[in-house]
Length: 204
Image (tube, rainbow, N blue to C red; front, side, top):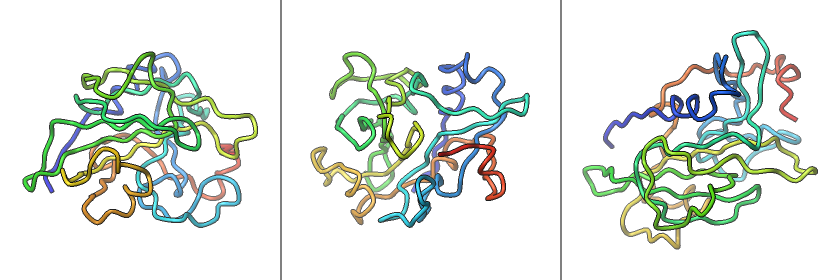
């Protein structure tokens, strides 16, 4: 597959300039990472299938304090493209964004955002520019067992997979779909949270 790179994390800083004004790095529990087989919430049990992407929830700032993504956290488009589908997920809505970027074997690059509140009248068919704000992190129910966060998936999807078949189970199981580690495509400063540090980050 071709190598791609983008500025998604730069756009996050721009779109959330107030809350991330003194941003230093992202903080990831191992369960938030691509292909992780463990949960980072609740009892930290095994996942039903490897994690399809990356969960953005916590960060550190220059003063040494930790911050968390909130419901007003703006979500930018990773690359220019077209919204092809918006559907409910268990914490909000998932936005499927197809890009005009193709692999040599004809697979199209997609970004899938999980647990969002789409912007205004955003709907399937809309075109968006790279860096344009397409929504915000979803407001969670008070009894939710997980903190508000943005799930980010990147994937090469063949034209044989129609839009109506795009779903979280299918992204993780269809042999024709190739998932991509977002941290490889979008360089950023980050740290993995050690077990002894979890209480200071307060993931629960």
